[in-house]
Length: 342
Length: 133
Image (cartoon, rainbow over all chains, first blue to last red; front, side, top):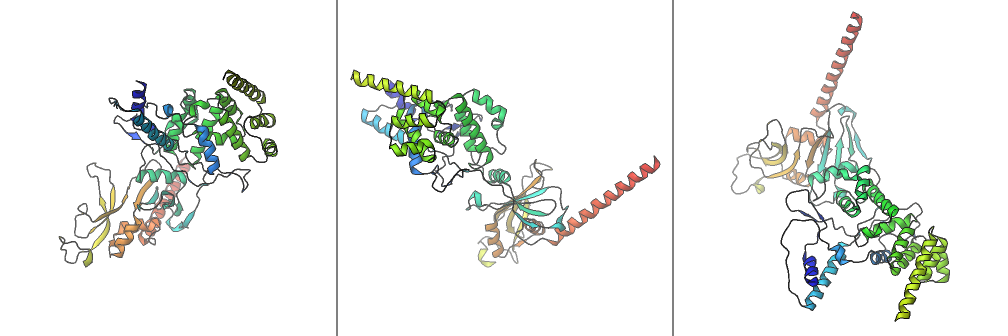
């Protein structure tokens, strides 16, 4: 029976955000963006600083994200239809699980992380003779099919005669008018306002907010960065890291916390759930990102690995060192008990 | 224009124009134009060769009039010898694709003169009211 249940879940269509507000069944595929090669500017960045897109960093982050098939393919609210049952041999079941893991890896691909875009303020021409020609602005969009949305020409002729390039918000809105993307609205949903965000966080729906944000905003817009920062802050404050654990947003959250040097809560949470490997990889990632910190230099000098890394980190960097040391001791006691029992 | 005449069109002296065609006339008092490449002899809203864009003359909530142009195809049709009409030429001039149409400048000047006239009339009226009081 359990096998049947898993088979049923595995064969369900794997779309993330279902547009349940509409009456018809619309499966909105949350934009599976491929990893872009944008670099992340940081106030303290050197040329040797590791970026979000480095393969080593990505590898560590994917390992920490984990791959809980039960959570990735959990039932989502969608149109009601009778479930399909398949009778499989053990080998077929294994193959199905393989396929499902590959699909889950694709679903867990991390969305791109870019620095905030600079506002456009290009004036193409100033024609004072046209002053007062009309009360409204004229917005001209180029609807040639074969050009990227980023390179499209969108210009605005103001009533006082200046011809300027459209701002980023105007560009997003007009591209959505002429080339509509599924799931994106012309005006941002009210869920992204401050008060509404707080309410949604109190209901533990951070993942839905982040999925909606990914569909609605461009990754380098200020709204996207603001919503993501607010979500990660709230998660950090309440320690609800488990909500994002097997989703595509876990890497982004870890990167943000590392950048702000506030990864202590996350380490404590990992140790509580007996994920020593994850905690070790988190600390090694921290040392990669901040190579000039004390714990990084200490670790490099001692060539530490495993639990020693955690001890060094607990001594030098963290504010909650007591917690981490206690948790480490508890883990070591458990492992010694297990080995003595065996 | 011989090479673009399809078999079933036999216009004697006909040529292609880029013009505004009214669309959506199911709703009264809500115009919406398509920028269209069509034969000169065809009806304004009839069969066209290709749609090259749109023009919405009523401003939206952000006080913008939305115009779209498929510049790639417009260049093709102009290369084939299509003539743009006056309103299309004005819009293309405002967009910066064509040089500014002289009538746009003339209209702007006329509007400015009109607003100045209304402003001076208002000032005169206010002066009269103060004088009465």
